[in-house]
Image (tube, rainbow, N blue to C red; front, side, top):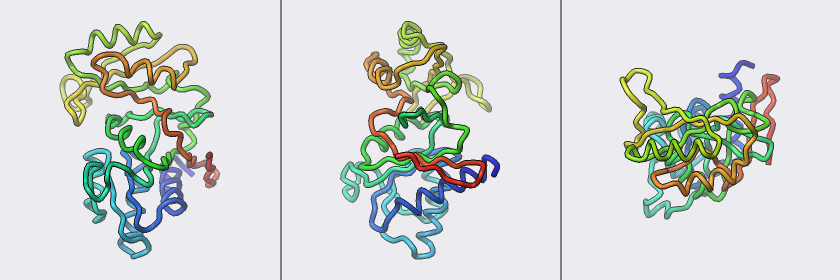
Length: 233
C-alpha cells in the first residue's frame, strides 16, 4: 500500500471499530482524519449509523462534514454539553508511549480542546508517523499571541528548542491561525520529555497552546504498507 491507501485504511478501520449510533464525536483535521470523516458520512448516508452529533476541529473539517451531511455542533451546544464520547484525529508523530504531536495543519488549538474533552481519543496514522522520539524531525507547533512572539521564542530557546516562525505558502508573511494567532515551529537536537515540556511551555505568558498531546492517551490505529492495521492501546 502507498501512503494514501494506508490513510484510507486506518480512517475506515477506526470508524468501524469505535463509532456507534448516538455518539457525540470530535472530528479531526488533516489528510489522515479526512478519510475517517468521509467514511462516517457514507455510513450515515447508508443508514448504518444514526443520531451522530459531530464537533469539527477546523474549517477544513466543517466543510467536509457539510459535504456529507454530518450534523455539526460545538462543544458549547446544549446537545454536546462540553463532553464527547470519542474524538478521532491524525497526528504528525507518535512515540512508543502513544504521546503525539499535532498541528502540522495549523488547527492544534481546537484539536487539543476536542481531544482533551473526549472520554476516548483515537489517533489514525500511517506507519511513517511512528517515531522513537518526538520533535527531533517533524516540528512541534506552538500557537502564540502575536505580541508575545519574540519573548516566547526566547523562552523556547532556553528549553533547548530551535524556533522558526511558520511562513505562509501562497500568502506573503506568516501563517495566521483560525483564531488570528501565529505559529512557532520548534525542533530539538536531543530526546525530550514531551509531557514535561507540554506543561512547561503552556506556562509561558502568551502561549495559546502547544502541539504536544500527552494528557489524554489515545488508542492508535497505524496503517502498514502490508495492508494491515496495528492497534496500540
